[in-house]
Amino acid sequence: MNFDFSNVKVLLIGDFMIDHYIMGKSTRMSPEAPVPVIIPEIEYSIPGGAGNVAMNLASLGANITCLGFVGNDIWGEKLISILNRNKIDTKKIEVIDGHTTTLKKRIFSNNKQISRIDYEKIIDWEGSDINKTSYNDYDIIILSDYNKGALNRSWFKNPSSLKVIVDPKKEDFSHYKDANIITPNLSELEKASKIKITNDQILVRACKNLIKSNNLDYILAKKGARGMTLVGQDNFIKHIKPHKVKKPDVTGAGDTVISVFSLAFTVTKNIELSAKIANAAAAISVSKVGTSTVSLKELFLMRI
Image (cartoon, rainbow, N blue to C red; front, side):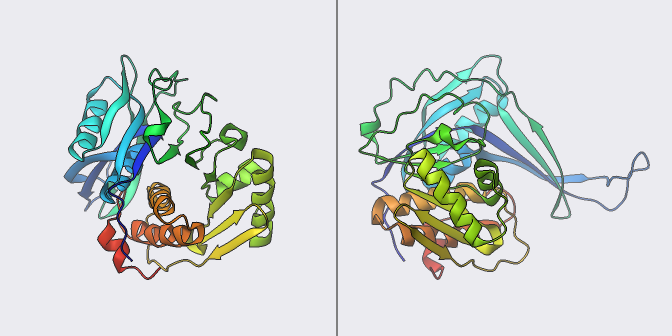
């Protein structure tokens, strides 16, 4: 399957962070505590959160403008530098003095993650560039919410001419009221609906309730190893079977899903096909270690 996303213009709004990896080996335990002694071999940093969404979109050839914030520190500088090198527009990313760029530092021993250290400072961001942004310059808007402050305010109004797709983190989905499509995982869906989801029938009921109460068009529910379920208005229900992956690493998989789904839906206008393509992309993503992107070539080789 071959798509050209080079003409798609995306406004990506969300929580930008950086993922730092320390990859090492261990051959002994520490005499000070029951933990392995790690000898680092490789260290590298890549964009995480909304930054990973941007990288996935760029890998697929789209044109991306980022709207969010970072701290005026070495990690914020590194994040913007990486995005710029990948031809991603960062002019609308605000650099805030005294703020700490969100950093997730993952430590691996013998190819297995053994620890994660997070640095973050959650703020109520006012968004100095929000009111200066013309939505008409874009084909689609993606909201990548990691609950770090970029989307805390209910400033966003859905422009009727555009599609707005949300990867949620807040438990109250009324914050995303009037968006077109929302892509929660099962845990997020349970918290938002206040329903324990034990089967697809209950899942569909939870989605229908949220669609009605928040004026959504569709919910794409991510079920991990069980695939996805797409629920829409007028009793639209599609269950999408998973692709089997041995030893999956789910880091950043949701970022890949919303990236691929948004671009596919923008180009094809086919909601079910777009969900199937995103489902295939998720399988590619979880087959890789850590935060990763999916390329058009990899998608082309998948059986949708």
